[in-house]
Length: 317
Ligand code: FAD
Image 1: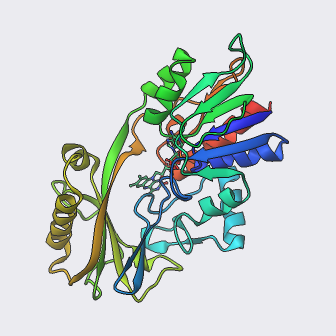
Image 2: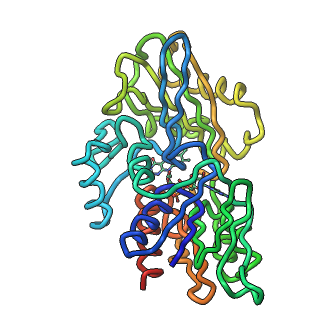
């Protein structure tokens, strides 16, 4: 089959790779400028220096045998490593979180910078496959379409064609997350990760010395701060500067006086972590339309992998 996959994060790329190995012709589309999805890495040039921050997923764990095997392959390729600061089972991409995503995208036909707005049935009777609609979308008919995007973005793509599939996506809600990225001019007197010790009224859910991850520039003092879902929800429409300042104040309240800030930024993740997520595989064999993503099985990188894996098996029969 000629299959279009909308979304080239962990779920879409896992699904796409497996379908290609099964002999299908897979084309992938992602609205992002580069590979990562929520396993993202942001890069800033300032004062002659390059700063990098993993501002989405901080680390991932591997428990399912299929994912453990995949992570071991990545380890042999040198694109993931353990990060003990986050716990014994914690892995990160190296030299940046998006490294495994980039590696997977390199082996597939992925068109970045292409937002798919909707999909339409092809053929005079509407029964001959699918067209993708959106700026930069190809003038090509596909036999099958997979939406490998967060539930809130999958719903509108599925809705006009299958109320049943769309309902599965509409049932899921994702929590937002404000992230601040900050580089200091000198080392803070603080552990590499701060989460459990945070008071319940802190806006912060997590703070980590990004530069302590393996393969990063350890000469820099780069931090990623994540707000709690509740605080992020309440402050969703505030400006990046306001959010950054509040999260820095919360860090200071936790670790004492901060050092001089060399560069800083903030990013709003509208759909960070899915809160309901046991939909199971989303696939209509008649329509040849489906969806995958962490939201079909759980709120983590491993769930995204497993969802792509399960959907590919279902499609390939
Ligand atoms: P995504 O990675 O979101 O991929 C979807 C892709 O679809 C994106 O690349 C997007 O650009 C693209 N897209 C969306 N709409 C369209 C469209 N219309 N057209 C084209 N492309 C489109 N997980 C952990 O395991 N551990 C953690 O510590 C952790 N922390 C996290 C912290 C934050 C702040 C966030 C945001 C996430 C975190 N996660 C964590 C969750 C983890 O990142 C996700 O579960 C996983 O990356 C989801 O992968 P995915 O492929 O399902 O979705």
